[in-house]
Length: 84
Image (cartoon, rainbow, N blue to C red; front, side, top):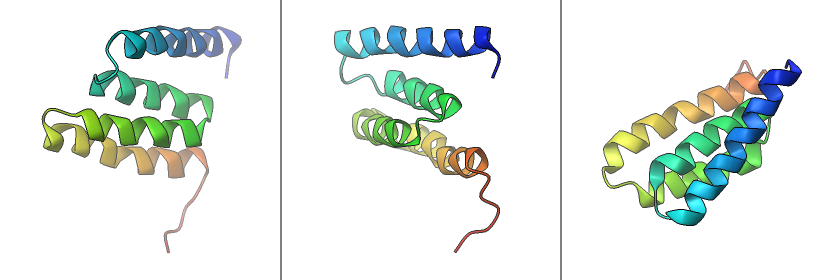
């Protein structure tokens, strides 16, 4: 990953950390931080944020559908091509 993109992702994490401190039950902040963690390869942190996003979602269907895409992205990041 180019250095400029890496720095942008790290900055995004910091901004989302602040947003979550200010509003700890905001599902979309967790979802966006999960996406950023995936880009950075922080799979465990992304999974934790996905769990929080689902927990705090006002409309469970909307956020759950978005979170269903996350395992596919994780598999892609880890280059997993088969499912068991």
